[in-house]
Image (cartoon, rainbow, N blue to C red; front, side):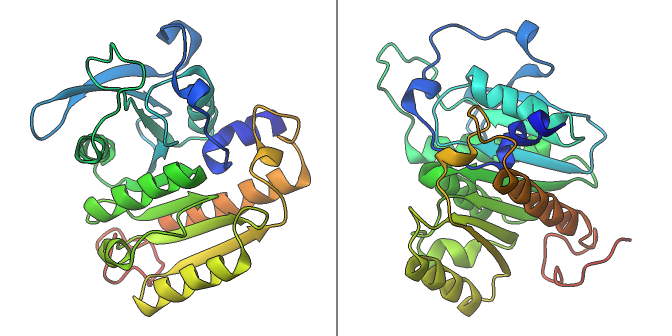
Length: 261
């Protein structure tokens, strides 16, 4: 049970490495419980996603790691999260033609894929949550929540997101959970982020841990530590709050009224 806990990875914040983002071997569905699906952006450009978890789930999670491709670690985390009855999507951020291993999508192309993935995840009655970990993943989660504000009800920032500009904050409509790690995220910066969010009237929940991202790596020895369990419990409580938002008014403007239809 505890081993599934941190794979729920999404919930766990991890430093994303380029080595993970550039998996050496092609992935197949044989190793995972979900499916690889091809979507297209609004401009008609194709890209691949991985989707897992029950299609009947009332909560959908878009996992954003800041990486460029689909690889085994993040897909395993998605599967474990899907096993907890969440519908999960992971986007392939590799360019369609990537002969150069260092080639990257433009910021516009990244957002276009995120929006298309959110559209696909937004089944009738389902609440959509973006979840990013590490500085790059958290920034992606915030951007996706801002550009698709009418479809995103919750945003989880794990170990990053403090430097997002006010203009981006102002566009979001979702509830936001910040999971902060004090060694790499100074208290003054966390307070500044909270003040800016609240000045803009954006509901924010903050939980700070006196440990590092690496210490709660679901692939490492800390996956069943008390800190890891505390993070997961806090995240599940946040997801339950998102799920309890009024379906008629989610994702806003009356989202402070927490009740079910």
